[in-house]
Amino acid sequence: MAEGDEDLPRDAKIVKSLLKSMGVDDYEPRVIHQFLELWYRYVVDVLTDAQVYSEHAGKSAIDCDDVKLAIQSKVNFSFSQPPHREVLLELARNRNKIPLPKTIAGPGIALPPEQDTLISPNYQLAIPKKRPAQAVEETEKDEESADLTQSQEPKTDVPQRNTSQRVSFPLTKRPK
Image (cartoon, rainbow, N blue to C red; front, side, top):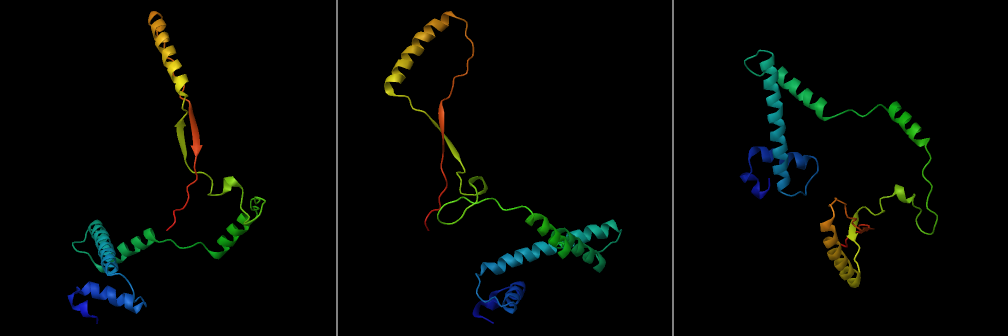
């Protein structure tokens, strides 16, 4: 055993020996703690389910059958069996009947159409259009004179147009 092994709890030593038996020699020390946490959580879940099954059956204590049933329900709930080979072959035949999309013609690597790729812009910014300074001053004067005339007329709520321009940018990868 290594130098620090005598400090480890029994369960940590078991996890360490399991990793070594599987040929895993290089790992971070926290991996042992992560496996222990997973192991303890799984055991608590199985025993809690076994206790529920035992109480449902009217037993005063958990027995081996309750634990087996709890483990089986965990396996059935957590893992699923892959479909049979024949089913996969039939799915593959049906999928392969559909032709691939046409490629973009041009030099370099052949790519599918723009709408079928992940390199198209993926977000948009709404940038309000700036008015020239002179136009802003004229607009302000017009608004002041319009306010004076509007105060004499009944007010109606007219939504103002928000003139904005949409700009798209593709995300680029940062150099590492």
